[in-house]
Length: 78
Image (cartoon, rainbow, N blue to C red; front, side, top):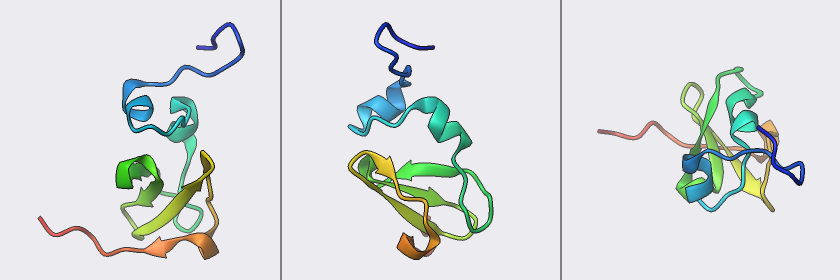
């Protein structure tokens, strides 16, 4: 849904993290390494792939989906 000024509608999870990532964009973003969907982590400052454990930074509200810019973090132990 688009607002009066052409801005995308944000879902509550994306908006509450403080990072204005459009919900539709988040739904289509995938890890460029393994093509798995990514999720918001680190209080909305990064996107993580649960398959290959790459973490892509979000800089100036823009996801940097470059493999060379990603860090690899091990799976969290429960």
